[in-house]
Image (cartoon, rainbow, N blue to C red; front, side, top):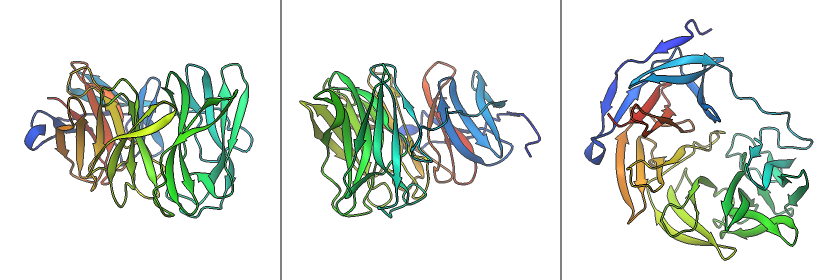
Length: 328
């Protein structure tokens, strides 16, 4: 049982080496090990023991305050049991994974139950169901709704039973939502990929989908641009990871303008998950910061504002610590 509802943050910091010398890593004291970080419309919440907390700050002084945890409407009929309903503000109102199947035995997300279908619900309530053939599954938990190519698309991981994983884009064509583009599969079973963010990272005017190819074995970041109804690889970069094998935490990354140039950047773990990397892509790929972590990153990342309104990154570590990477 958590004995205190509020934990006052101490000024425990770790100096960051090299180019990250202007960033610090602050430990946020908690009444137990951090289990989960979720980002809600009102900001991130943290699961510690059996209780949920939100981060409150006054300047650079932070504390955890007890709060309600995340809630979700009951899952629709035949939805993936551990799936999460994605909600969008434009033409796609909701999307979720459905029709559980055990025909793919990878278990990278904690079990061997994946989805055969994806349901897309429009703003007017009409639904389209995208069902895969027997040689593929959606190996994902949360669809991503994003404006690609001028209209809402749904981005999801599709895994071929014999040919590995691909990034699939689902959009409206001929009056219904269906797969309109996908990347080449990774080549063999159990070679998974995990999306890391969607934004115009490279400044070419087209949103890019950042994805990590084989985050447990290869750790290569790829940027894919969606234009002319196809996905085009824009670049590759090594030494990253955004997932722990067997974990349901898929969002070990965050998108924000970390260097103040008006362009989106990416915060992501290094391949060994012992550093937090801040990566910019314009005018060329460069590392804004590389912040040493005292233990492996294991939770989803969350964005919070620092005292000056600049983005900071909240994450949980394997040793149970909750830390905040921020400018001093």
